Image (cartoon, rainbow, N blue to C red; front, side, top):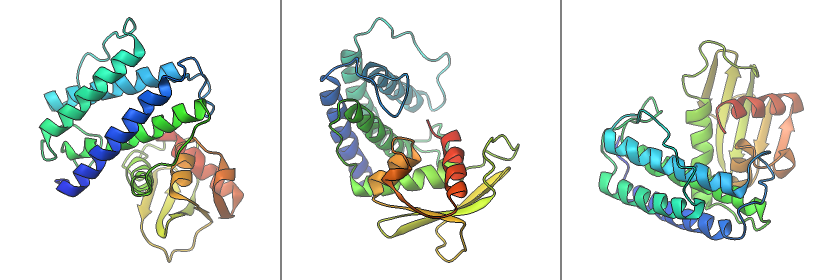
Length: 248
């Protein structure tokens, strides 16, 4: 599929703004801990994000996964490395356009347009990581946050990853997630997870709230107190654990 030009421009605008904000907050201090991610510091997030950017540049250049990977970047100053990778990623996406055939982890989208959305969302979540480290958190763009909820649920949770029963959280329940009037209904068991936009199905539990809070809850950056829930607390807990298996 080809990403519409206006959507591609939206993702690039979000990526530019959030990646610039990430760099700005990183300069407040590299040694601060990232509260939702034990063991992570601002520096480790900066290095991780830069490496992700460089990886996607190679994916776009090669049309496949780079091998070997990753390069040894330990001797690079983290902020300089990030600034270089950020500029190179924006350039690589603009040069690739949205219709270039390339590797992605989506079963249905093997075009460069996939990486426009994925990199915008990757950056938004890690920008929040750094803001939480320095207690200066700001919201994610509402449209982007809704898109991120859809990505987590429809692609990462609802993808064909579970056939072998490789989960420690089988859930075996139907759960609905709602934000800003948009709903996703997920039915998960040990060997599958199916996500639809059906709002009529009976559910064991519902999670709802502001798009930023729901997205960050799905990514483990907010605890359950940041969202509202109804129905079975056990289903909510099991659902969050299942989502954690397909996100980082």
